[in-house]
Image (cartoon, rainbow, N blue to C red; front, side, top):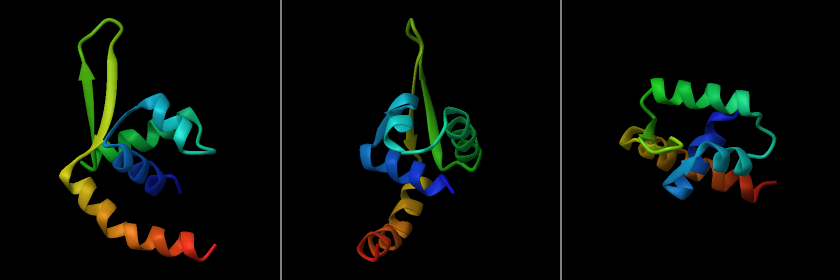
Length: 84
């Protein structure tokens, strides 16, 4: 249910932190978002970038495979938005 929303949100902003994604994907819980991000990372659709700072900072971005998927689903999203 949330996968397409997470992919398009990250893709629209190029790179986002967890809380930015959480605030932009309406209705998703932190637990569900964490699960989706782990799954998308496992599928090599999303890349997790860890910055060795204090405090640590983590950002997420689409991989080339994730960008291809986003381009493929963009027409479907556009159609759904125009047929609400």
